[in-house]
Image (tube, rainbow, N blue to C red):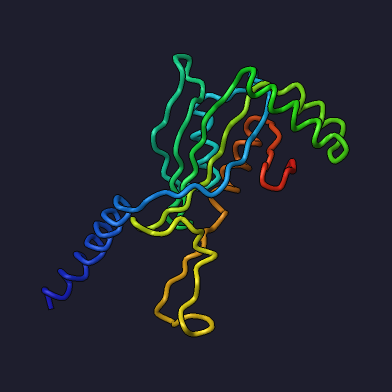
Length: 193
């Protein structure tokens, strides 16, 4: 009986170690990038960003946290094991951001509210929010959602087709857009969210 109890306590730790080892050999494949634009005077502190993200999802793992000498946010990586995803966030500012925002404003001027257009034009900073899918090393770069099924119409029960879950991306974007009071732009759809 003691042996069974001992194994019961060891198995979760073995499973955790196996998960960590598998994660260390996984690869991150880029899927999409969103942009959150705002005036640079609303640039958040790294501490505010980390608090907002952990409040949004306490299961997020935050890594590679970077700030400038004043403690203002530079970049970080958000890992979400449950979503098979990671999100890299970096702060950008300068003429390139302003030029890009003006180009987006021209494209969207008939589609968004005047207040949003004005905010887009006066924004000179942004957060680049890049979404990555975690996949086993050596996997094709095709998104999991487009995996081809085997001979059977819907694949066998043993096949595990984990689909990329956008929850991590959407949670990060929502938390950071609220924190900066910024506009979120999705270049794939060409829309302000």
